[in-house]
Image 1 (cartoon, rainbow, N blue to C red):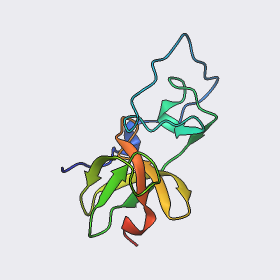
Image 2 (cartoon, rainbow, N blue to C red):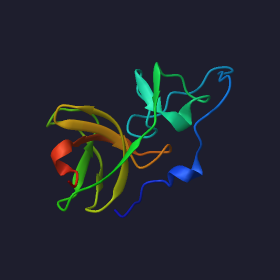
Image 3 (cartoon, one colour):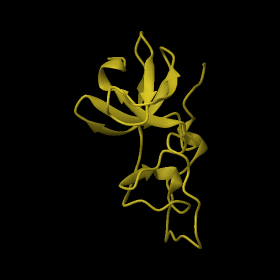
Image 4 (cartoon, rainbow, N blue to C red):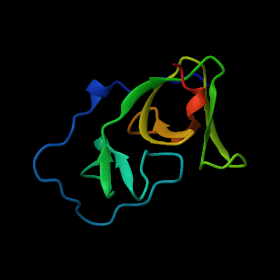
Length: 117
């Protein structure tokens, strides 16, 4: 599956007062980069999260990487990113990163060791 991260110039950091109006359907796991505790900055104003994160660009290493639903080895695989794929990292926790291709996803957990140096 050949994919590329979104171009960060395609979305802007929201400015001014941000508000949500009405209910918003919860996206399926592994789609939008949205968790209860944080979300991609481009989702501010459309989805509620405790914190919004400006992503850090990284590249998938030479072996490629499985993108998992959570940080367990037996977790379902959401997709696989090929070597050299540009991603956006939103959170780092020990040996795992949570990232996405962009604000429209897909998103999931990747072993930090699967990223290029």
